[in-house]
Image (cartoon, rainbow, N blue to C red; front, side, top):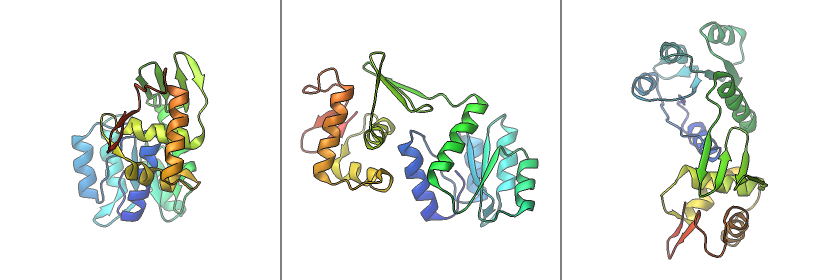
Length: 216
Protein backbone atom coordinates (compact mmCIF):
# COMPACT_ATOMS: atom_id res chain seq x y z
CA UNK A 1 0.00 0.00 0.00
CA UNK A 2 1.45 3.33 -1.11
CA UNK A 3 -0.34 6.14 0.74
CA UNK A 4 1.09 9.35 2.20
CA UNK A 5 -1.92 10.30 4.35
CA UNK A 6 -1.12 8.82 7.78
CA UNK A 7 -4.75 8.58 8.95
CA UNK A 8 -5.91 6.85 5.76
CA UNK A 9 -2.91 4.50 5.86
CA UNK A 10 -3.55 3.55 9.50
CA UNK A 11 -7.26 2.89 8.97
CA UNK A 12 -6.73 0.96 5.75
CA UNK A 13 -3.98 -1.15 7.28
CA UNK A 14 -6.25 -2.08 10.19
CA UNK A 15 -9.17 -2.86 7.89
CA UNK A 16 -7.11 -5.00 5.52
CA UNK A 17 -5.46 -6.93 8.36
CA UNK A 18 -8.90 -7.70 9.76
CA UNK A 19 -9.71 -9.13 6.33
CA UNK A 20 -6.71 -11.47 6.59
CA UNK A 21 -4.20 -9.53 4.47
CA UNK A 22 -0.56 -8.89 5.31
CA UNK A 23 0.11 -5.21 4.58
CA UNK A 24 3.36 -3.41 3.80
CA UNK A 25 3.01 0.38 3.86
CA UNK A 26 5.08 2.97 2.00
CA UNK A 27 4.43 6.71 2.42
CA UNK A 28 6.48 8.05 -0.49
CA UNK A 29 7.45 7.13 -4.03
CA UNK A 30 11.02 6.37 -2.86
CA UNK A 31 9.78 4.06 -0.09
CA UNK A 32 7.42 2.38 -2.54
CA UNK A 33 10.16 1.67 -5.08
CA UNK A 34 12.37 0.20 -2.35
CA UNK A 35 9.52 -1.98 -1.04
CA UNK A 36 8.62 -3.17 -4.55
CA UNK A 37 12.23 -4.20 -5.08
CA UNK A 38 12.63 -6.00 -1.74
CA UNK A 39 9.19 -7.54 -1.07
CA UNK A 40 7.04 -10.33 -2.42
CA UNK A 41 3.42 -9.26 -2.75
CA UNK A 42 0.21 -10.17 -4.57
CA UNK A 43 -1.33 -6.73 -5.19
CA UNK A 44 -0.37 -3.07 -5.06
CA UNK A 45 -2.72 -0.36 -3.78
CA UNK A 46 -1.23 2.95 -4.91
CA UNK A 47 -2.15 6.57 -4.28
CA UNK A 48 -1.56 8.66 -7.42
CA UNK A 49 -0.52 11.85 -5.60
CA UNK A 50 2.64 11.43 -3.49
CA UNK A 51 4.88 14.03 -1.80
CA UNK A 52 7.94 13.15 -3.92
CA UNK A 53 6.31 12.23 -7.22
CA UNK A 54 3.33 10.21 -8.33
CA UNK A 55 2.04 6.68 -8.22
CA UNK A 56 2.49 6.08 -11.94
CA UNK A 57 6.21 5.42 -11.41
CA UNK A 58 5.40 2.87 -8.71
CA UNK A 59 2.84 1.23 -11.02
CA UNK A 60 5.48 0.83 -13.72
CA UNK A 61 7.87 -0.77 -11.21
CA UNK A 62 5.16 -3.20 -10.08
CA UNK A 63 4.29 -4.22 -13.64
CA UNK A 64 7.97 -4.88 -14.34
CA UNK A 65 7.78 -7.57 -11.64
CA UNK A 66 5.08 -9.49 -13.54
CA UNK A 67 1.32 -9.75 -13.71
CA UNK A 68 0.68 -8.21 -10.29
CA UNK A 69 -2.62 -6.32 -10.07
CA UNK A 70 -2.53 -2.59 -9.31
CA UNK A 71 -5.42 -0.55 -7.90
CA UNK A 72 -5.02 3.22 -7.90
CA UNK A 73 -6.37 5.44 -5.14
CA UNK A 74 -6.99 8.97 -6.31
CA UNK A 75 -8.43 12.08 -4.68
CA UNK A 76 -9.53 13.30 -8.08
CA UNK A 77 -11.89 11.43 -10.35
CA UNK A 78 -10.72 13.39 -13.37
CA UNK A 79 -10.67 11.47 -16.62
CA UNK A 80 -7.03 12.21 -17.39
CA UNK A 81 -5.65 10.54 -14.24
CA UNK A 82 -7.95 7.56 -14.63
CA UNK A 83 -7.11 7.01 -18.30
CA UNK A 84 -3.38 7.44 -17.66
CA UNK A 85 -3.46 4.86 -14.88
CA UNK A 86 -5.44 2.33 -16.89
CA UNK A 87 -3.22 2.81 -19.94
CA UNK A 88 -0.20 2.05 -17.75
CA UNK A 89 -1.70 -1.32 -16.88
CA UNK A 90 -3.61 -0.55 -13.67
CA UNK A 91 -6.38 -3.08 -13.07
CA UNK A 92 -8.78 -0.74 -11.28
CA UNK A 93 -9.07 2.62 -9.61
CA UNK A 94 -11.15 3.99 -6.76
CA UNK A 95 -11.80 7.64 -5.95
CA UNK A 96 -11.45 9.12 -2.46
CA UNK A 97 -13.46 9.26 -0.31
CA UNK A 98 -14.33 5.62 -0.79
CA UNK A 99 -16.36 3.02 1.07
CA UNK A 100 -14.02 0.56 2.83
CA UNK A 101 -16.18 -2.48 2.02
CA UNK A 102 -16.16 -1.56 -1.66
CA UNK A 103 -12.37 -1.28 -1.67
CA UNK A 104 -12.00 -4.71 -0.03
CA UNK A 105 -14.39 -6.21 -2.61
CA UNK A 106 -12.39 -4.69 -5.48
CA UNK A 107 -9.13 -6.00 -4.01
CA UNK A 108 -10.54 -9.52 -3.77
CA UNK A 109 -11.89 -9.30 -7.33
CA UNK A 110 -8.49 -8.23 -8.67
CA UNK A 111 -6.78 -11.04 -6.79
CA UNK A 112 -9.22 -13.64 -8.13
CA UNK A 113 -8.65 -12.43 -11.69
CA UNK A 114 -4.89 -12.68 -11.24
CA UNK A 115 -5.09 -16.15 -9.73
CA UNK A 116 -3.81 -14.97 -6.32
CA UNK A 117 -7.18 -14.74 -4.63
CA UNK A 118 -7.28 -18.06 -2.80
CA UNK A 119 -5.92 -17.68 0.69
CA UNK A 120 -6.63 -20.71 2.85
CA UNK A 121 -5.67 -20.91 6.52
CA UNK A 122 -5.71 -24.27 8.34
CA UNK A 123 -5.26 -25.18 11.99
CA UNK A 124 -6.44 -28.20 13.97
CA UNK A 125 -9.31 -29.14 11.64
CA UNK A 126 -10.37 -25.52 11.10
CA UNK A 127 -10.12 -24.28 7.50
CA UNK A 128 -10.75 -20.62 6.67
CA UNK A 129 -10.83 -19.40 3.06
CA UNK A 130 -10.41 -15.64 3.37
CA UNK A 131 -11.12 -15.12 -0.34
CA UNK A 132 -14.64 -16.55 -0.07
CA UNK A 133 -15.16 -15.90 3.66
CA UNK A 134 -16.09 -19.55 4.22
CA UNK A 135 -15.01 -21.34 7.41
CA UNK A 136 -15.18 -25.11 7.96
CA UNK A 137 -14.48 -27.32 10.94
CA UNK A 138 -13.69 -30.96 10.16
CA UNK A 139 -15.24 -30.46 6.72
CA UNK A 140 -18.50 -28.96 7.98
CA UNK A 141 -19.22 -25.28 7.29
CA UNK A 142 -19.21 -23.07 10.37
CA UNK A 143 -21.47 -20.02 10.29
CA UNK A 144 -19.87 -17.07 12.07
CA UNK A 145 -21.35 -13.65 12.76
CA UNK A 146 -19.50 -10.69 11.22
CA UNK A 147 -17.82 -9.86 14.52
CA UNK A 148 -16.91 -13.50 15.25
CA UNK A 149 -15.32 -13.76 11.80
CA UNK A 150 -13.35 -10.54 12.28
CA UNK A 151 -12.19 -11.73 15.70
CA UNK A 152 -10.96 -14.96 14.12
CA UNK A 153 -9.13 -12.99 11.41
CA UNK A 154 -7.37 -10.93 14.08
CA UNK A 155 -6.07 -14.13 15.67
CA UNK A 156 -5.09 -15.55 12.27
CA UNK A 157 -3.12 -12.40 11.46
CA UNK A 158 -1.24 -12.72 14.76
CA UNK A 159 -0.62 -16.47 14.98
CA UNK A 160 1.66 -17.37 17.86
CA UNK A 161 1.48 -13.87 19.34
CA UNK A 162 -0.13 -13.25 22.71
CA UNK A 163 -2.92 -10.69 22.29
CA UNK A 164 -4.07 -8.74 25.34
CA UNK A 165 -7.75 -8.00 25.79
CA UNK A 166 -7.04 -4.30 25.18
CA UNK A 167 -5.27 -5.15 21.92
CA UNK A 168 -8.24 -7.23 20.75
CA UNK A 169 -10.65 -4.42 21.64
CA UNK A 170 -8.51 -1.93 19.71
CA UNK A 171 -8.43 -4.20 16.66
CA UNK A 172 -12.20 -4.75 16.69
CA UNK A 173 -13.33 -1.24 17.58
CA UNK A 174 -13.34 0.51 14.19
CA UNK A 175 -14.48 -2.41 12.05
CA UNK A 176 -17.05 -4.09 14.25
CA UNK A 177 -19.96 -1.77 13.59
CA UNK A 178 -21.27 -2.40 17.08
CA UNK A 179 -20.22 -1.60 20.62
CA UNK A 180 -17.62 -3.99 22.00
CA UNK A 181 -16.44 -3.75 25.59
CA UNK A 182 -14.49 -6.07 27.88
CA UNK A 183 -17.57 -8.08 28.87
CA UNK A 184 -18.89 -8.56 25.33
CA UNK A 185 -15.40 -9.57 24.18
CA UNK A 186 -15.56 -12.47 26.65
CA UNK A 187 -18.93 -13.47 25.22
CA UNK A 188 -17.67 -13.38 21.61
CA UNK A 189 -14.57 -15.42 22.40
CA UNK A 190 -16.80 -17.98 24.14
CA UNK A 191 -19.16 -18.12 21.13
CA UNK A 192 -16.26 -18.42 18.69
CA UNK A 193 -14.73 -21.26 20.68
CA UNK A 194 -18.07 -23.08 20.74
CA UNK A 195 -18.09 -23.03 16.94
CA UNK A 196 -14.45 -23.85 16.10
CA UNK A 197 -13.10 -25.94 18.99
CA UNK A 198 -13.53 -29.71 19.34
CA UNK A 199 -13.81 -29.16 23.10
CA UNK A 200 -14.62 -25.52 23.95
CA UNK A 201 -13.88 -26.15 27.64
CA UNK A 202 -10.35 -27.25 26.71
CA UNK A 203 -9.55 -25.13 23.63
CA UNK A 204 -6.67 -26.08 21.33
CA UNK A 205 -6.98 -23.26 18.77
CA UNK A 206 -7.58 -20.08 20.79
CA UNK A 207 -5.73 -20.60 24.04
CA UNK A 208 -5.94 -18.48 27.17
CA UNK A 209 -2.64 -17.13 28.47
CA UNK A 210 -3.33 -16.63 32.15
CA UNK A 211 -3.11 -13.04 33.32
CA UNK A 212 -2.14 -11.79 29.85
CA UNK A 213 -4.66 -12.57 27.12
CA UNK A 214 -5.11 -15.09 24.29
CA UNK A 215 -3.02 -16.77 21.62
CA UNK A 216 -3.80 -18.68 18.42
